Length: 150
Image (cartoon, rainbow, N blue to C red; front, side):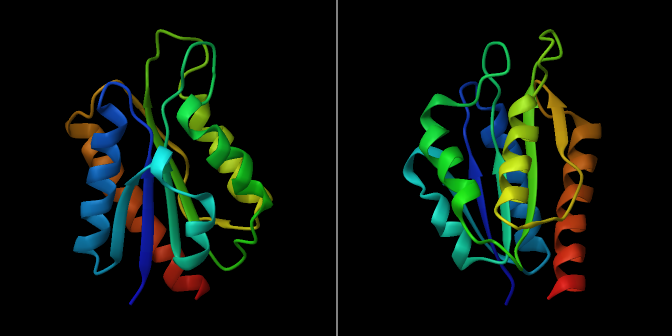
């Protein structure tokens, strides 16, 4: 069975919601998926799954989640060849650096050798009906990409 780990960092709860939806949608697609908060997760746990997902928040002027800095710094040092990844996160379009942590984590996955399974998904604040459709499509793309590469 295909396995996944969905890791999130959230202050307002918006990214936790995004991660919960991704996790549930993966399960609907018959993926053995686990949801974990970033501060209690080691990046090397991605070595034990097929699909890797991070849902981070962006703080201030494009800063990464402080509680996830060790995780972020460890991520590009891993060997994630054969793994598929996706990054999705909520941000606030009020800020010039809108949801840039999503892109930063995606770049870290690429350095680790993982294959991008879906385009980075950025959501303005809380999930609305259109965002829900985008999250469902994002999740389907992750699984479809994994099915092609396995």
